[in-house]
Image (cartoon, rainbow, N blue to C red; front, top):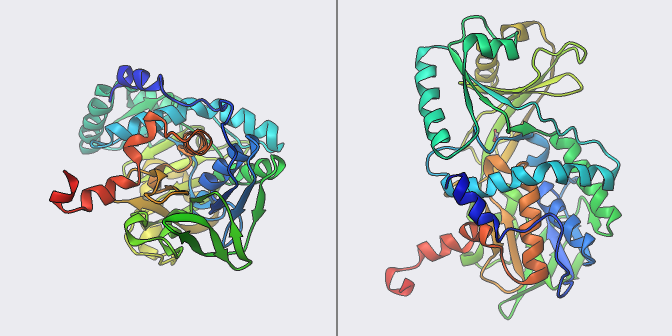
Amino acid sequence: MNLAGHARWRESVISANFVAPQHRPKTIVVGAGVIGLGIAWRLAQAGCTVTVYDRGEAGRGASWAAAGMLAAAVETEPGEETLLSLTLESQRLWPDFARELEAASGIAIEYRSEGTLVVALNRDDAAQLRHSYDFQKGLGLDLEWLSAAEARQREPHLKPGIAAAVWSPRDHQVENRLLGRALAVAARRAGAELIEHCAVHEIIVTGGRATGVEGARGRDEADIVVLAAGAWSREVGGIPPASLPAVRPIKGQMLALQMDPAAPLLRHVVWLPRAYLAPRLDGRLIIGATVEERGFDARLTAGGLLALLDGAWRGLPAIEELPVAETWVGFRPGSRDDAPLIGPAGIDGLVIATGHHRNGILLTPVTAAVVGTYILGGKLPELARPFSPERFSRSARPREAVQ
Ligand code: GLY
């Protein structure tokens, strides 16, 4: 879908502020990552009684591990044209969402609007970058081809011999760890109860309807249960197999180097052929990320770190002198088609919001808005329909049953 198509879609799109809800169902959210917390915040703001459970600390899963890039343009690959309508809408919501969240929580989340550079180091990279650029420009995205000199004017510490770059003026970043913290505070201040270190063992389904959860603190009943447990969503019991969200963990190894915050090596998010770099206001330079199918294996590997450091060093040699501040592993919730699962799960009272894969931070505002609209108004906004969790169960049915 190009930008004109996207504008048409927008007619039906939710805004960050809800219309007056017809009812205010008591809601339990399973998972206190940015997706679950965003939904909880919106529902609590609308007057619902909301309880959020997390097996650990709020915001400490993929939300913590992420790099915070809000990259609707440069992360769009062939086959993701439908996803683009959702990522662009969320990108449009982000500035107001950030302002509202900061006001509600009193926490600055470092939403930064310097844009993103995608850098080609040699002629082969440049040919590949040209291919992506042509594809993304064809979708109507706002991108500009830069010479090596133009790229180095924007980022003087890039290696002198780079081949070319693409400038993406609308792909920004946010400090995802502060985002998680701010959402937890805002949700609580709006009236949501947040229960951490309390695993939900089972979603209770009675007579084809989700009626609550059973967990470490016993049974808790609700009108609606939202499953937003990211890569762990299939670990929650009680859901009939046909409604289990088709997600799996996609491991990402990452690290942070420490720059001098008064003299950072980079100002923009920079994508190199084998690593991306996100500079933070406190001087950390986030370098990510591997993409690995290794289940929940949380080990850092020499190969993973070597690939990231080598990938970063080839474009930004000055990192050589920087101390390593942190290393970590995260698990993206990947789906079969790399798009999120948002909406009803085929069981009354059960709503899914997971599978955000590489785009969880970017898609937080739009997911909170569409799930809120669905729970309060009973209708999934048009924009979110292609991401119905039922798309997988439908395609899995035998042919005759689909007619
Ligand atoms: N969106 C960046 C990542 O998933 O590594």
